[in-house]
Length: 107
Image 1 (cartoon, rainbow, N blue to C red):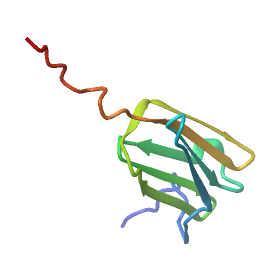
Image 2: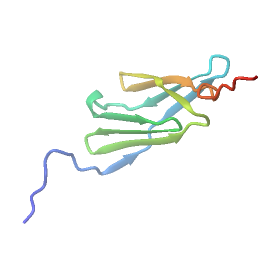
Image 3: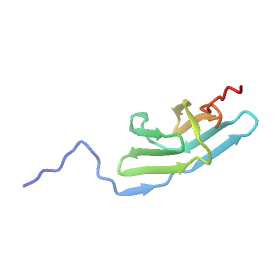
């Protein structure tokens, strides 16, 4: 006989949150705003790789999920975020593709 764990709430609803993505071409910066009404800060999980991101947040019996790909590689070290009043703000810079380039010494 198995017992139900009370650590995790039962998820009944899967929701794709409203989000807005902006890119500043001159500064090579991007911003992502995600609406998560009523979600506690401790229930927000955001993961990022150079070309994609993954967001999950839980509120009561609802799970918010948002996944996306960046159209360019981002600088992971520049990513920062804050969460206030149900809005998640994530920002960062686009990685310069020549940052890791090999510099050839011309003779």
